[in-house]
Length: 146
Image (cartoon, rainbow, N blue to C red; front, top):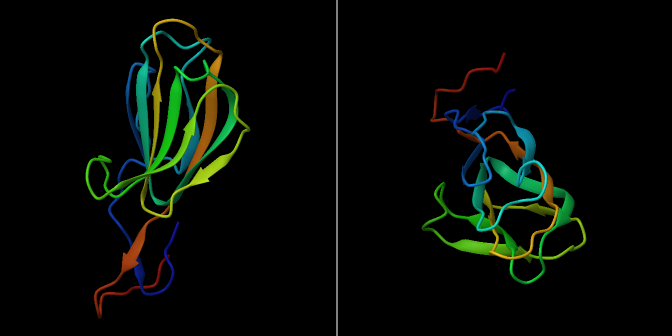
């Protein structure tokens, strides 16, 4: 991949980072799949994924969680930890909502899932994508991309 003339690719960072009880691993790939895991999800699950890049997005391909008490949030973040710089909620999902795509205008998109102790649904699956981040070259440092 290459950036437009006058721009350089920023340092390579994991395009997705994740944690919690759903099981996951980071990736340098520009896209992939996230889910609550195989089969029904567990009680007291707390899972998160942070997708970074140019306009990261997530598209839900299946969604069935307990209405009201189990929740999935899609949030746009101002920093890689989604801790400062503002967090904007793009969606708060529960039950069986219409399948949709959510795209961040910032560099970071977080998906957060929580479940309670009682009922469970079949869970969710989503595909995600992340574009390359390019930043302007310092004057006199531009070279043609191969």
